[in-house]
Length: 413
Length: 82
Image (cartoon, rainbow over all chains, first blue to last red):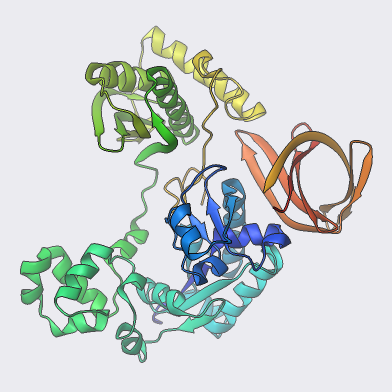
């Protein structure tokens, strides 16, 4: 350890999902691309730089995107390939420093403080090396911004405001210039609603918050945000970024949700979707040697929503146990009567299996043996090779990685 | 748009620095010469490891999959420009 101020790099991949599709397929390069979840979907989950330049925003509907960009080309996402690319990025970052945190599929923080003492002299040279290795490893079309600073908030701000494919270093000497010109959308931890509230006060950049005292901010933003906003105003790490230092040893919950193509009225289909999502959740739970004792379900329609949870005395990790609690006990007793577009299930209050009491009852042991055998088949032949008979006649919903990497530990990132 | 094919193919390639590089494949009795691998990805379906190659034959893009457990190749998809 040394007493040098920290040096953090924040690597932000440029339009990652779309760029990788363009790297893969030269016919897509230079064209406005809207990445959709699957064929037939209408929500743009990511846009290429060409589409962004024409005004297409992430999260916009295809109809709206076509109004500003009539020639937009929709291409389905390749989540498993994004995950692999991020794994390769992690390896590149680990070659630079052992202290790497993959913040989301397309962002990472690298602490190079100790490396600067012993290996590297110049952080900008490290950033250039990273950009060059990414170019070699993932391809010529894949670029990234690198932000450098003495904490995560400013490193992330630096990569956010740097020009595409560039490096920006925010130092203690020049940080006020950037804090006085950065939009709040570039500040990690400040959301849209907070930005709107600040605007009412005439505050449009982080630096301007300094003109208010904690006492003045307190009645408007509450005790947490009054302090937090002042920290951000002076360029100190926000609470959300300091949480990176306190990563739990294992996941606290495993969940899965899916938004369908259209409203689902068919009760049998609802049952199948719930079972399918539970299969994925319990498989991941077992793979991580965890068990949970709280189950949660949420169903959402256009105008209706319903959710329920139950906390169990016993820890569970088998599909039949979770399905029994969620479907038979919670869903059927409430039977929410509305068409559903979004399904979500979650298993939480997790513990390591070897820290939970094992059931001594025979039926549990039978389920354990069955799950063990099914997992062995899955390991050898792939997910859903063996599945409940009731899922045979339906299209299987397969696992998919999310951009914010909620399943970071499951994927080993 | 990508057109799903999902048919078995035969692939020939070379090993360079411990890395396999596909050079050509045979599909429906026709041989396709690969000019470039534009993206390579390792994925896992349960415990089944797969290696996905996106390759250019002329200007046409093909998505090939090598199942590392069964050691079999599949032509998954072809890009058809609209």
